[in-house]
Length: 317
Ligand SMILES: [Zn+2]
Image (cartoon, rainbow, N blue to C red; front, side, top):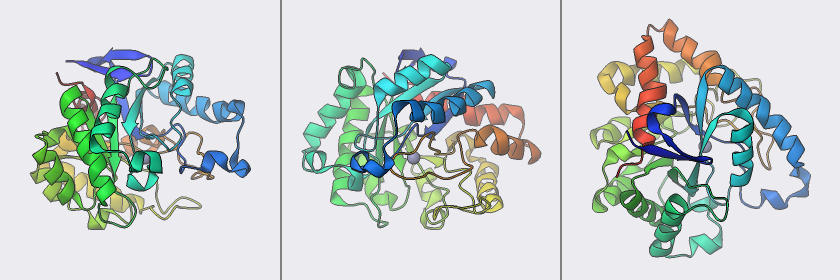
């Protein structure tokens, strides 16, 4: 199998072990770094983050895919330091959470410019950090429909993915027709695209899961743990049992190889308080025990958290 770019260098895909495929060290809306109300010292952020990554490692987690795009607080030197301190492989992304979080400088750039930017970050590095991006992030802006800017970013991502062999993960899987059309036009194998947030409260009911699977795409149940049972649930929460049963129905339909699961948690959120009581370790503390209780054999749990992510993240060339 081929390699995966982590912030500390390439790692053979078979060494990723248990992967959290869609997580955040720290995610914030563009501009939150200018709001003095939310400023944190580097020490504070470090203190909030390191214990969560250490616990992740102790539970057997090995690889953390940091899905924060350009403009949302991506900080690659910080990720390198966290990875060196905790022994967790961190995969950084290039791309954008969605058109609505791309600042005007990028929003006004051409497809060609964005394509070259993504390729540079994947093959040469992100600025002068020495770290290469391991995956491309794209997404659907708020409002339920892909905007023209979303489509421009998807097209640039498809071109960069085709040229470099890295995979694409999406924020939201609603309105997938324009995305599927762009990926097909650009000759991309949909198996290289993870259509994410297919499971959250407001979006699960309007996501055409079967259509995405029929087109060959992968489905991300990657907001596990944002549930209405939390003391102060966010608007995207969903009842635990409802999400879990939905997930198991897709497994039982024979689509386990197309599924990826994660918690989309923030170790140390930027410009917002975050969601109390929710961390990446939901995977180990709740989800894997729930899967076992539902009768999922260990070999299938390994497919979900080890083999599927390794196949998806491995650079194809
Ligand atoms: Zn996310």
